[in-house]
Structures are given as C-alpha cells and as structure tokens.
Amino acid sequence: MSENNIKFPSKDYGTVDYAHNRYNPLLDQWVLVSPHRMKRPWSGQIEHRGDEEVAEHDPTNPLCPGAKRGNGEVNPVYTGTFSFDNDFPALQEEYETNHPFLEEKTRDIIEKSESPFFKMRVVKGKCRVMCFHPKSNISLPLMTEPEIVVVVNQWINEYKLLGSKYAWVQIFENKGAIMGCSNPHPHCQIWSSDYIPNEANTEDKNQREYYQSTGGRQLLIDYVEQELALGERIVEVNNDWVVLVPFWAFWPFETMILPRRSIQRISQLSETDKESLASIMKRLLIRYDNLFEVSFPYSMGWHGAPTGPYKDEPRPYWTLHASYYPPLLRSATIKKFMVGYELLAQQQRDLSPEKAAERLREMSLVHYKERNAKK
Ligand code: H2U
Image (tube, rainbow, N blue to C red):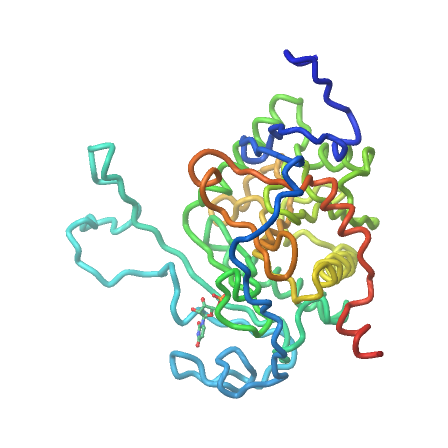
C-alpha cells in the first residue's frame, strides 16, 4: 500500500486513470503515464499526412534498381533485396590523417585529455544501406511473407558480415518523412561500430545485472512470460514470437517483438523462426497501417548481444528484440513531440500502453489499401 492509500492493481493496469510512473528495467528509467489527460483538446501542429502515392519505379531515385547513386555508381537491376556501402557514411573504416590528436603509433582508440571535460575517442565503423524490395510502392506490410523472409535473411547476412569485425551492428529502419527518412523506397540502414553505443551498453548492463541477481534468468524472457500471463499488452503471438506494447512504452503505439525462447543474436534464427517472424511482422505492420489508414511512420531496430571482439563471448543474459517507435498519436496528422518535460525531465505519455495495445488488437488484418482496391 502506498502512502496515500492508492492500491496498484496486479492486472488491469489499463484501468488506472491517475498519474503514475512506470519503470523500464532495460534502460533503468522511469516513464510518467498520465491517462487522465487523454481528453485534452489539440490545437497544436498538424502534420502532413505523408501518404502520397509512390510510383512503382522512379529512375531518378538513387535507391531504385538501375538508378544512379550519389557517388555515380549505377545500381544493378535487383529483384530481391539490395545492399550497398552508404555513399555518405556517418562512420569511417579508415582515416587518412596526420591530425596531432591521433597518436603516431596506434592511430587507434585513445583518450588523450586528462581533463574530464574534453574526452574524445576516435571511432571506426561501416555504414550500409539495404533496399527491401525492387518496387518503391511495396512497403513491408504489403510484401508477401516469403518476400519478408528474404529481408530477414539479408539482415542476417549483413549482421554476420559486419559483426565479424565490429562490436555493434545496428540495423534500423526510419520510415516516413515525419521520421526524417529521406527516401520513400522501402529500405533500412545498418551502422556498425567498433564501440558499443550508449543505448546498447545500458541494455547490456541491465540484462547482465538481472541475470546475476536471479541466478541466471533472462530479463526479457521472464518479462514475456509474465506479459503472456497478464495478456493486457499483447498484440500478437505465434509459436516463436510475441508482439507487445511494453509496460514502460514511451511512444504512443510503441511495440516490441520478442522471442519466446532464449535467442541472443539475429544470426541464430532457424528457418522456422524466420518464417514465423515474417508472419508476425507483417501482421503488426498491417495493424499499424490500418490504425490511421496511412503508411505508418516509425523508427525500428534490432538489439542483440554484441559482436566483433565479443562475438565468441557468452552473453547468455541477452535476449534479441526489435523495438518500434512510431511518433503518431491521435491521427495520421497529429504526432507526439519529444520536447519540454521529455527533454528536460522524463519521458511522459497520455494514452496508456494497455489502451494502445487494445487499439492495435482491434485493427483488421486486411491492409486498408487492399480493402480499398476491392471497393
Ligand atoms: P534514410 O532515408 O533512412 O536517411 O536513408 C537513406 C540513406 O541512403 C542515407 O543514409 C544513403 C544516405 O546517405 N544514400 C546513399 O548512400 N547513396 C545515395 O545515392 C542516396 C542515399
């Protein structure tokens, strides 16, 4: 019982209509949930719907088959997926520099400053771009399941290739102009680095601590088990995977895809895992698109155990997972902003994660474009 005699339910969290904080054990952070605020009127910015018809092929789009890219190279006339080195990479593999900050001998990771205020590390990495499909107007939810399996296989190829050298391989998809995506052609990016980035480092630490304090249990495997028992935040389940709105979700319709058994890295997926993943991803993405009848924008990405120098280290506490962070809130034109309190104090949401899961579960599994085409 808390100080003011408010009893929290062990189930039906969706009925809680007063402000509360929820704990994110992966990031060791709290999220403020304010469900009582859902009724407030909106007079803020209205976004562009961002659902213009995209042509099947645009010879001037550098991601299309046969098109010329920014560096002058011409893409092959690919028929499945197509990956290439990013022509404008954020991380570089090698340096051709004699800058005095780089030590003559190592030219490697160094922290030169003795002051706590001017720490700097030289980092290396490789960035790739991966097109999902030859047609610009076929996003993942409109692909067939076998076509999505091809995408999963290519994710695995990229992960293995880059993970043989680099400590972290971040596969991520930025979808929609609202998310800063520069190109409507279905694609993702893969940035690999010789360091473990902040978010991944925090997840590594918190999963390890949970494993150590529970005598060898995986945080996310235990979490999935309890979520399945409660059911409130589940969106989709099959034999191998679960899609849920995390208890600690920050973005209005945030979801995670989690395996139902211990898997550390995407490279460990069996053929069956890949097929069932393609199926559950397609179902989630159709639900997303149907929510506001728009090609649903989001940032998504995969997190798994570190690679490169760590690839042979046992990291049994890790559970592979994908996170989807979609910005839309009330409609195709009203998005959630990460500003004010979120930037200065703590993440906050109005719509409860339970209501978000319920809304997603209510959606049809027939894509609105296919339904409209039949009319
Ligand atoms: P986003 O739209 O998700 O930002 O991805 C497009 C990426 O494709 C971007 O990182 C790369 C950009 O650098 N790109 C090329 O490498 N070559 C091109 O000719 C166009 C875009």
